[in-house]
View 1 (cartoon, one colour):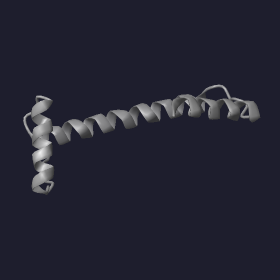
View 2 (tube, helix red, strand yellow):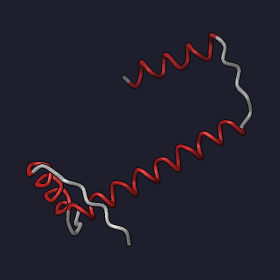
View 3 (cartoon, helix red, strand yellow):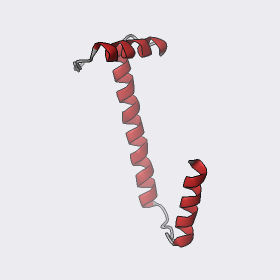
View 4 (tube, helix red, strand yellow):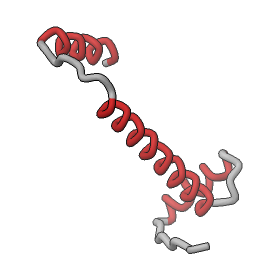
Length: 77
C-alpha cells in the first residue's frame, strides 16, 4: 500500500491525534485516510447528482423559479 508523508506542526499533529482517538482511529494517518475517503465519497455523490440533473427533465428558469430559489436561500440563512 502506498504511503503519504505529510509534515505537520506540533499543534496540528496533536489535534489530529486527539481527534483520531475520539473517533476510535489508530492515529493521525488513519484520520487522514478516513477524511480522504469521505471526500472521495462526497465527490462521487456530487458527480452523481450533477449527472442526474443533466440527464433529467429541463426546468423553466424564469423569474418565479429564481424568486423561489431566493426565498429558500433566505429561509436557510
